[in-house]
Image (cartoon, rainbow, N blue to C red; front, side, top):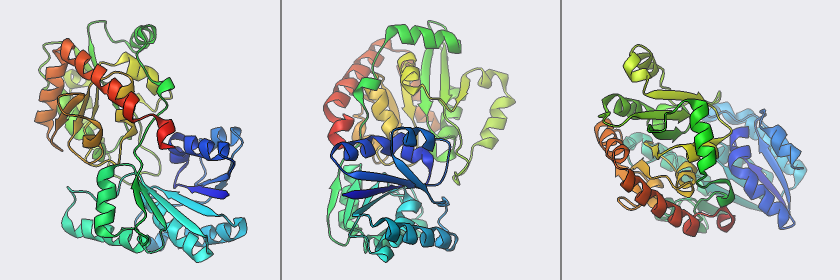
Length: 367
């Protein structure tokens, strides 16, 4: 078959969809990537994939997508795809409409996490549910990563055929795992002392990832043990989510607070950062089925995460990590502080997490 993999930006195509594209090609299909232009597409093309670029704004102003829809309709008609497989909320809405207009035989949508969630105000939530329902009238198959999202999709009728499946999420286990030599090297390069407990956070630098609460937790942490936070991530140029500039200004004005946090920026060595860390945290307000938690579990790290869909499917509270309420910096500080001061608990939770990851989250199974 000839299959289109569509996302909004190069970041998604390169970091999340490339393994799926390889798997489809290995199975004998022709795979074409479609997203907005970006530097990360060079690496995708270097693997022999054709990528067509169409600008898709990350905005829910539907009128702003008319041009993108027209270009996608023409592309789909010219290419005569057997399947258009769409990803990410906005690209999925525009892409499904365009595929339907172009007469694509089969339209598949993977929801990496519905934009609506349990903590969203009901008028806004109702609007986004309605948009998903409308797009579902032209969706033949709906995959979700979290089983909780699959149950929601079935209950709300978000796929006209009822063909809904929770497929999970995963990573390549060969890329992640403890390595004492790498741990020593990375900690030395970044400047963490041998006795320092390193908490790692990986994610886009936006408020909905829980950065304001995490930074406040680091401010309030009882520092009986030397502890510092490493932040690996940057704000994408295409990101419309609220930023964290205000809290960053507060940190900059407080030298004691600033000393507890290292901003590492965008990194290409996340597996090595995981090996160098002692605790992983993801205090997001919403997620789908976060891959970073799976990476941390493969790396043998205990995880402190918020009690939201996806995360609560991955982390078993008290067994592989600790769950805390959303937007609760005090609870987050307490959980991080307890783990920072208890090496035995970190080891126990981390080993249980790695065992669970090996059993449940091998990327090959998902593909």
